[in-house]
Amino acid sequence: MAGTHSVLRLLNNRSIGALFQGTMRCVPLKSHKQLALQATHRVRQRFIVERTAIVNQMRVLLLEYGLTVPVSSNAPCRRSLKMPRMACLTLSAFW
Image (cartoon, rainbow, N blue to C red):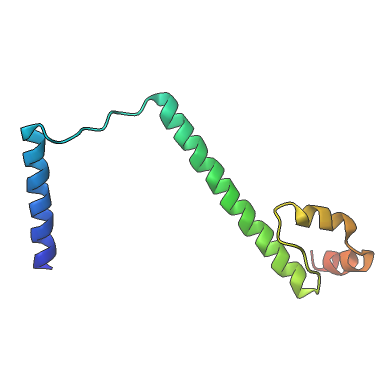
């Protein structure tokens, strides 16, 4: 562990030295508009991840009953309209 601490100390010393010498490039602060856009993208990405997880979970549950659904984000919605009546009755008994 002593090696890691000495490397971090060396990097800190270099950073402090670069800051005082004026060779360090400072990053400008982001505007409120940029921060809002970044937050929007993060939230959207989180929704996409959750939607994918839910669709995959539905596919696995249907596969346990012998119903295969193609890999697509809107395939389960289309498939639910075409699902055989017996399969709907079987699945509804468990829900």
